[in-house]
Length: 156
Image 1 (cartoon, rainbow, N blue to C red):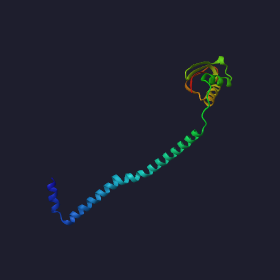
Image 2: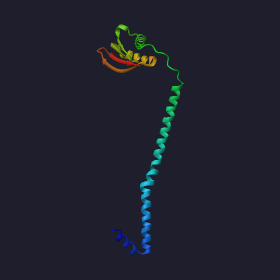
Image 3: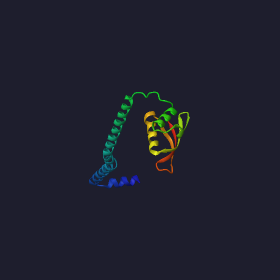
Image 4: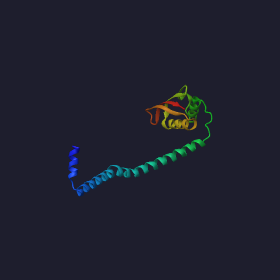
């Protein structure tokens, strides 16, 4: 087949050869522009926006890291059961109104009947003052308005 193309090429006039050569150069240049240059140029604004977002995230993370590094080390904390009992007392929940079982680093707290607002206050006090957080919770509404049964699993 290449022989047929070579024969056909040799029968062309020099002007026709020049026109075909020029046409081939135009086709190659247009293909390079359409399939290589244009996608690269179109992608530049997106890449700049991604770089700006990444720089903002880095600045935010650096600021958070510097704030965390400047904090004083946390003082020694009370045992988990003492922290929970203290939070209950702070919100006027009697020790007899709650069942507390501590097993290692976790505590199971059951409040058979407590106001929801009081429960929220207890959880907030534990988290803020003693770094004790709720790992699992089952909260069931009671018949009386505003009262709930709360079964909480707590951990540091």
